[in-house]
Amino acid sequence: MNASDLFVQALENEGVEIIYGVPGEENLDFLEAMRTSNIELVLTRHEQSAAFMAATYGRLTGKVGVCLATLGPGATNLVTGAAYAQLGGFPMMMITGQKPIKKSKQGQFQIVDIVDMMKPITKYTRQIVNVNMIPSMVRESFRLAQEERPGAVHLELPEDIAAEEVNAKTIPIFEISRRRYPHADRAILDEAAEMIKSAKHPLLLIGAGANRARIWEALSNFVTDTDIPFVNTQMGKGVICGHSEKYLGTAALSDSDYVHYAIDKADLIINVGHDVVEKPPFFMEHGGVKVIHVNFKTAIVDNVYFPQIEVVGDIATSMARLANRVGKTGNYDFSYFMKVRDHVIEQISKNNDVDSFPMKPQRFVADVRKAMPEDGIIALDNGVYKVWFARHYRTTQPNTVLLDNALATMGAGLPSAMEAARLYPSRRVMAICGDGGFMMNSQEMETAIRLSLNLVVLILNDSSYGMIRWKQYGMGFEDYALEFNNPDFVMYANSYGAKGHRVESAESFVPLINQCFDEGGVHLIDLPVDYSENTKVLIDELKNKDGSL
Image (cartoon, rainbow, N blue to C red):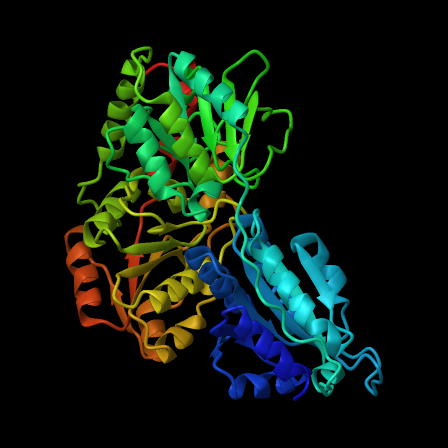
């Protein structure tokens, strides 16, 4: 047995069943150890995609997703995926190779200090210099990757260490200890409950931390037990059913969005799972609305977030105990909140049946919702359509909308959807990408075919970087330098062995989606879109800053 065998056994001990990546010559000992193990390698066409898939595995399962790359350019290609997992709060481990550290005949060829490079974007990064360190370093990596706040970790395995023999003195693999999150102090819970009961217009706000923590039942019960309305951030979307009568909407923007009417009216915000990496859904002011911070950790205080009380501990337990203490009271006045809810429903219903073509955002969002069942999963790349889906796409089950409002990177939509389709082969899964974002990792269409996935890839085609054009317009600049040409996406899909389709009319869109899912396999739909409505959204935001309905 050598160090690579020990490393792979340590990963098996952590429950790892799959690793995504692109190996290089410095990984060959490790690859051989994997070959004789129970761990499967998913070979991707780019290391960045491997990292996105591993991060999505972590996001959907709560377990650590693992990806593999070689030294130098292979490792540098993981950087965006590392930042994606770190900012998103997704548990992920990266394993990279390196030239021999005891003796090398290649000088500085391909040598980059990967450990130093990873420090700002991981929770833990180390080079393995001795076989005896492998069990403890793997255990520590997994502990930190999963511990709140979850994120990315990295281990570098040099080529000569990977082949080092294990002897009788080598430290054995560590047993995984059981753990339990602490509970909030009773006095703090009592104080928070009194604040909620004495408020006139309390509002529940659900952030990203509540989504990844799997506390859906506790939050749903809190709303049922107290009747307090709720809103969510983009990455908190779906934690509680979007069809609830108490759901007011999603804060798709930081300010001047529809739900900010309710946020501005609230005299108390119960902020559950707040994560500073998301764009803030509201800004605190001294003397303004009071805030209760409910999370696993204390608040990171800054000029726009300084909660008056912090309920720190296991979120599910905290919310259950708060619900028991608060119950239903006769003090609340939610009439204004209900007006906001009606207003939001009215706004998101506009133009969702317009037959114009190319299709407008309201229509294509509504049509995707019609075609996707309650447990269907959409994985969004990054673009202006993300705002439309955050606002207009209602969810009934958690983690059925995968969007990134932390790093907000392009190129993650397709690999994320691929991993969702791999994990849940019986559910409808759709990647929703702009034409710009799709082309950043479009080579993974081959991987999707090779994995025999059931997946529909929807390309919103406007031949430009639409989000930046929208911002360019809003800032008063001339329309400049953001348009490009695309390949024939139908032929492109067919060349990989997928089935390509082009939408010719608005009426044909939903039947085409259903046809693709019914046939199974990998399908690509090229949908021409009309983003002229984006400017209307921006104008509406500017008009509504007076707080009126």
